[in-house]
Image 1 (cartoon, helix red, strand yellow):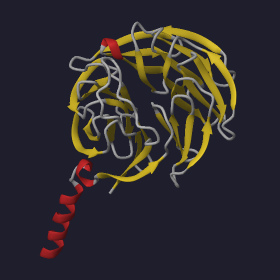
Image 2: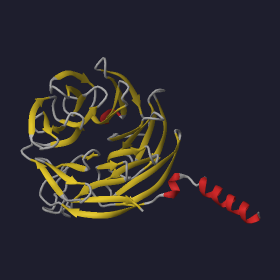
Image 3: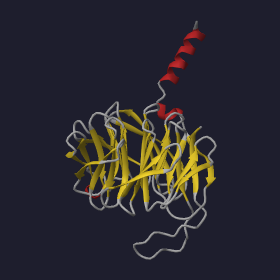
Image 4: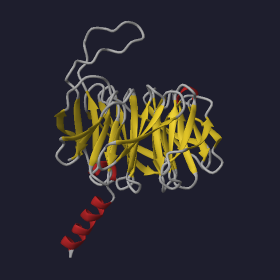
Length: 336
């Protein structure tokens, strides 16, 4: 009987260990993709197990299982992001160099159409509930809304600042970071208007944005090495949590209650949501310098990020370091 109670106590102790302590991550795979030029967002295709990686003049498509390149969408101009509508068999690309939304076929990867949007489209979002695509236009500081089925522009939403990453809640709201105003704007998808702005004290230049739909929490990755946790229904900042420097993308996995933020200084910060108002840093996973954007596969808790080697010569003022040609690579972070 004593042995039985001892076993029960031991099992109980294991049961109360927080999820943050039960899983750690490591850089498990590195795959050379090569080529020249910069990059921006990555997008995970959960339906067909692919990763879409934007590279300036084209989009690379990588098989998530084999980690081999299986396709390419060429002939683009300053691409930034990719959004997918698998139920429509369509994908969408923001082409910032020519102010276009590029529509392509998910099976063939062939470009089907191009739609004129606002000035310098950067971030992109597909709202599956409304079957609409939003481009977030950095120069014109607005969002162009496009019907995903017809490819027709249905409206433009002024945002009053430079938009970055956005998320949708499926209930008539789209939330987007306004980078130069240190706030999140809420767009009403029925009114096609920005109806609220949530200031984030202690958050500078928010870029990354992730969303916990169940607990209604927004996670904004900020340029001053924190995430700002915002309760949109109350319109208030809940707390901030430390992360690495140079964040530019993030994701939330509802299966593990973990937030991931990819940081260009060379770490992937993993945070556990202990409760809607309490958060713990699980790990700062070493990646590589420049690995600032990412995509998450929720099923396997695998994170995909990319980087390249940089010329050590200091660049002229106001310019970025040159990328060493043919050093571009895919980094895969997996749970141990």
